[in-house]
Length: 87
Image (cartoon, rainbow, N blue to C red; front, side, top):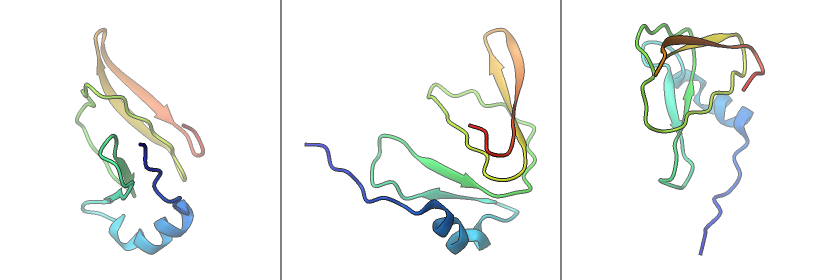
């Protein structure tokens, strides 16, 4: 049987963990109660030059500000811009 984890008030969680979302690490894993997927919450600023080359799907939701993700696709490098409020 599938178990359903409790809901999380995301703005409250971010406020409680804001001190962990600052450089140098700038991220914290959100406890989801499952091993099927993970949720990483990343604060900023955070600058990286690496590429996302991952065999798994990724989903980005930009709460504040803007970001870009460097991808390495079959056709070569690609940059995806994600604006505030975008997924």
